[in-house]
Length: 125
Image (cartoon, rainbow, N blue to C red):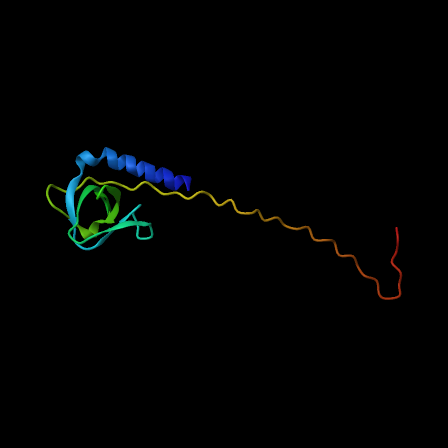
């Protein structure tokens, strides 16, 4: 959870620092604005067809600003309005904390004692 919060904070700082180089674009279809690049990440909102947005940078996913919200969209569904290609931006890696599950201990099994046949008493030490 801390790593996700750190990644989102880092992304917000990068977006705020990079808005001077942002370029305008529009969506070519209804488009999901996500918290991080990838189809399995949380959807912040849906940008309607033809919605205007500011692109900070792209690779296969673009870091954008839309309606005051910052996030990531798939680069296949946006079209630039003016200017050249955007600068290449790589997403900060989202790491998961290590799994600290319950440890597995091997139980010591009791040493089996031979059972004498019925009617024979056990030897005592």
